[in-house]
Amino acid sequence: MKNAPTIFLREMRNYFVSPIAYVALIVFTLLTGYFFAAYFNMATRYEGEANLRMLFHNMSITMLFLAPLITMRLLAEEKKSGTIEVLLTSPVTDAEVVIGKFAASMAMFIIMLILTFLCPLFLMIYGNPDIVPMIVGYLGLILLGGAFMSLGVVTSSLTDNQIVAALISFVMLLGLWVIGWMSTTVGSQVGKILSYISLMEHFDDFSKGVMDTKHVIYYISFTVFCLFLAIKSVQSAKWK
Image 1 (cartoon, rainbow, N blue to C red):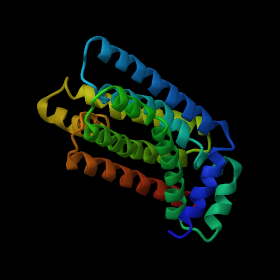
Image 2 (image 1 turned 180 degrees about the horizontal axis):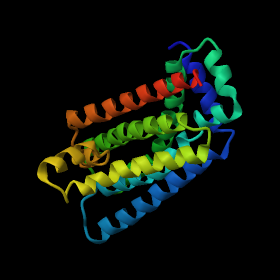
Image 3 (image 1 turned 135 degrees about the vertical axis):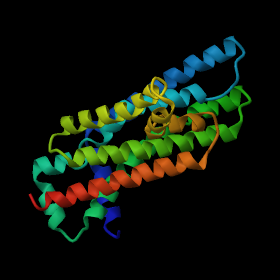
Image 4 (image 1 turned 180 degrees about the vertical axis):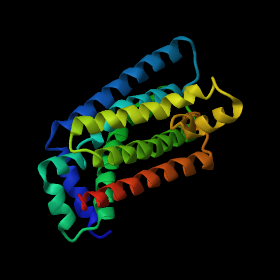
């Protein structure tokens, strides 16, 4: 993995010379700030509990739209411009390419989360919240973000069109969210399976400040599996 940091730095540079990074950062920060202001106003008016539970849920929904935007160009742009052939014939492995690009998308996402730290800071100044649930909630967002970004890397590897990659990623993420609702309308056994597959169902405990190892294992397994598929997709491109 010695070349992965080079790929990572290259991708981070590409992010900040295009409007994608700035649009994602601004939209995510503004929406998070708006939701926080609304909930903070509601909590103070009705003497509610000082926590970020609903804010975490809204941040996860916002990620459904922004994750495809962040990942859509990672491999699709390389294919369209033809640089993917140069990259794959250089002394760098397929795994290093995928890991480097995934790490760059995660770095972008973590920067987005850092910009929202004013919300818990504001809550600590004017309220008396429990710190641990907020830390657990942010950890859950990072794990959820890893799952979102890894799926985006897969979809970006399947096409040379960034818009198509973003649409496929969004539809798949939306589907993995909606099946959580479907689990309540089908039989108990099938419902349990659908609930387990759903990305958002595993986030619910994190938003409440509860960290269950089964959710951590699920997100890590999902991310690793998607990265494995992305590597195989990149390898298959060599034979076309």
